[in-house]
Each structure stands twice: as structure tokens, then as C-alpha cells.
Image 1 (cartoon, rainbow, N blue to C red):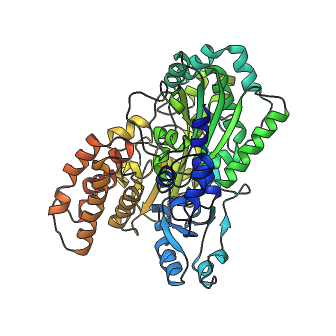
Image 2 (cartoon, rainbow, N blue to C red):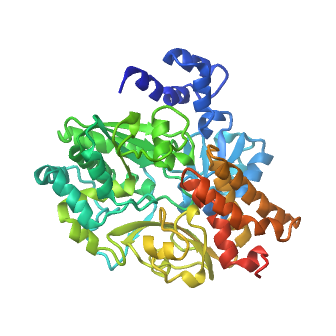
Image 3 (cartoon, helix red, strand yellow):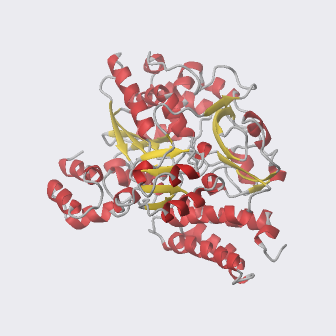
Length: 533
């Protein structure tokens, strides 16, 4: 990385250290880095946590938190005169409602936790999502006791998987990933072996490894739990990737709100280093600053380079032209954490663990179930099987979101469908990040749809018109319906707008943003008052 690139990469970190875009901070950071002030301000203004530093308290209004009274908490904090605003999902859906106090996530927040604060945001109470976090986890009886990730297992810094990977060699390791059928666990489901081979084959140097830990899809919190409980799996998986692909620098991009996972990863890195493992591999932790779109791999690269987190046009793909224009492997936390077990046990072993598709899957489940949490189960289990692992349904099942906000909604009649890549695609949905939100009949379907639409409208980066305009149109169309100002006209245009967004958006956010509304219109026409009801 050249000196100029290094300076620019430090832009966002310097601005965060200065407290965000406060008076004079852009000028000072520009002076320190020798960059135009407009460039510093332009990058900083893109990220929520930098652009509005005076907002000290943010209430999560993601679907799971909204179902537990988040908007009432927001109104209460506003009435108390606190510097508060709503925010998108904080990856704490299993302990809803949650809020952000500065960069600390507080969970299980109750009305009295705000009522007693007397207008002082610092006094707001709640359990903190820290390195001592204890969430619900589990595994299914149908899975071998030896799990690829094993959230309940003990930390292992022996480096046995890394040493075995050295013995096997890069080609054999990648062949094992291929045999395992390991698909990206972050949402896209792209075969990991193809990515690894692509980077390895590129002659340009250096090669980089990037961990995508910017988890922010409403309903999803599996990566948070994995980094807190098994950071050893993550770091060893990254080291194996670096060894196989000839990379010396590994970048870990975490949500800025993930203080606990950050500390857990730091401890794991230090433990491996103390054991004399992974020589020549340098791990760099980087905090995000509040932009869901940076979960898109090329937007993440832009942010790492100190720029606004806007997706790049593809091709070229990151495997060819990634971080600072060099070949780059980008993997989700769960994907990379599967690698050590595959190296040790073999690809066929991993493949056999699945029910309908290869391997196990970390499913996040929240909403109306007895024990919201993260469960490692065979890939392809049904909603009923997942809910059983989570203690059963609360109330009568009405609907569920099978894979985060991007997957839309399915009715209770789909409860037996396999929660896998192919099965959900056939139902007009997607597995995505496997963030499952369960809604019982006491919920309002139209309110649930609106929360998802608000999320996409707030988190659109605005780069392409179909997404920028379309997300607003969808939310406004539903609002007019809620106010009784429009009976059918706006909703009748939804299909056309959804098509335009899918065809014209640069990235997956715009392509999937209409699904909460289109799937609800399809499966719950009466609840939305459509012409078909």
C-alpha cells in the first residue's frame, strides 16, 4: 500500500478519533492527512456515527425491536428531551429492544430505564452487549456432537488446523472446500472454493484477505455471537486463507458497535501470537462507522480505503480488483469459521452434516419464540424444527421472515419448507443471512412491512436512482394506504417499481428492498387491503 493510500485509509479513523463531524474536525483531519477538506467531509458525512455526533442515543427500530416496543421507547426518550434518534438494526434482536448509547449497545431496555434518566442520556440503563455477553445458543440432536463451529466449545489456540493446512498445501485445502460444498454464509451463498481459486490464480501482488463482520441485517446476530464465543475459529480460518492465497495482510471490518467482538478477536490474535503461530501474517482490525450498505463487499472495500461506502460496479470482481486494486478474498465471519473444521475433518464430512444442502448453518431466530438466540443446525431444517430448538412458538404463528429483511415474508403455511438456499428461492424468498424473525397473530402485518421498508429507505446509499427513489416510493405508498389516502393506485404500482429496482440497482440492497412489500401483498393481501382481498 502506497503512502498516499495509507493516509486516505486513515481518514475515517482519524475523524472518529476527533469525535465525528464536529466544528473544525474536518479541517483538522484534512490538515493532518494532506487531503482536501471536502474529501474528508464527503466521506464522514456518509456514515451515521460520524455525520451526527451530537446524537448520543439511538433506539433500534429493526423489526424484532419494533415488536417489543422500540418506538414507544423512542417517543419516551424524545419526550424526556434526550439527544435521541432511531437507528437501524443493532444485531441484538434476541434481546430486544436495544439501543445505542454512544457506541455501547444496551439490550433488554425497559420503559423505566429511560423514565428514570430524567433527560440525561448518560443515565439510560440496560445490559451492555460486551465481551461478557451471554446469549441463547444450541444445536440440534440430528447433528454430530462434533460441529464445524460449535459455539459452546472451548477456545482452541493450538493451531492444529493451520499446521494441517500447511501439510496439505493450498490446492488440497481449496479442493476440500469444494468437496464440502461450502457456500458463503453472509447472504449470497457463493461457493467459497471459487473465490479462493480466483484470488490464488491472480498474478498481481500483493493479495489481501478481508473479513466481512459488518453484520446489520434486521433479524441477524449470528456473527456477533460467533466472534464473542469462538474468535479462535475466525482467526485460524483467516490465517489458513492467507497461507493458501499468499497474503500477508488480513483486514477485519467490524461494526463500530461491536466492542465485545472486537476485544474477543484481539485476545485470540494475541493468544495465537504468543504461541508463535501465523508468522508473517498481520491482522488489522477496522471499525465501521454506521452504514449497513458496507455489508456489501465492494462498499466495504471503499470504506476500508477511507471513502464513502458505496458499492462498485462489477466486473471487475474483488478477486481480481479488490482492496487498493489488488486481488482480494472477502468472506463472511461464519464462512471463514467453517474452514478449520473442514481442513481437519474433510470436505465429505462437512457436506454430510447438512439436511438438504451441505453443512451446518448458524440460524438467528428472534421474535415470537421462547428462547431467541443462535442455533447451529443442519442446513435445510424447517421453521418448525428451528422453533422447537428455540423453545417453541409464542402464540399462533402468522408469518416469518426467513433470511433477514431482504427475504420478505412467508406465511405460516410455509413452516415446513427447508430453510436453505434453493428451497427459499423457489418460494420467492431467500436464505440470506438466515436471520429468522417469527411473527404471531397478535402482530400487525402492515406495521411489520413498514418497519422493513423504513430500514431500506434509511440505509440506501443513494448512489443509484432506482434504489434511492424506489425505497422512498414504496414506504410512501404504504403510508398513504395507512392514512386512508389511497385505496389501490399506489399499491398497484409496486410491482413495476420493484421490477425497476431489481433490474436497475447496482447492489443487492436495491434488488431486494421491495421484497417485504411484494411478498406481503402476495401472501397477505387482506392484511394490506389489496384488490385481491
